Amino acid sequence: MIDDRKPPSRLSGFRVCLLGGAFFVALLAVLQPITRYEDCPNYGGNGNASAFANPAWDFYLTLLLFGWVFLVVLEQTLSVTRRGRGRADVALRAAGAIAVTTVAACGLFVNVAVVCH
Image (cartoon, rainbow, N blue to C red):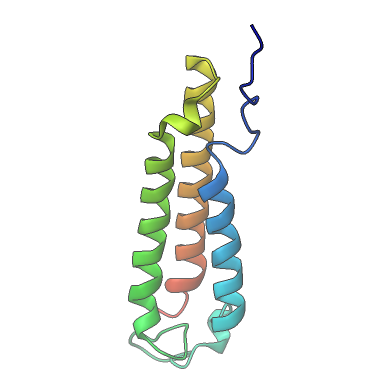
């Protein structure tokens, strides 16, 4: 009997993580947010300001980051992600993908969204 199954992909469990990361790099390149406190419109004063030209992006970025983490968790539940792997391998890959995404999302949010607040 010939085994026609393909070996599991090295990217299984990390696709959404990597694609989401690339999406956010491109999004921030397009939006060009303020990244230094000295460049904020409220520098030297009080109050809140946005790091983006359109203040609504503070909210949109938060929603997109939560959605990214949710999609990474969702990807870990798909049978395609687990196919051909042992339990320990699946658990380690899921933990790695979720941890990397969560740290990246939190770091991105803190560095960009709250710089002028």
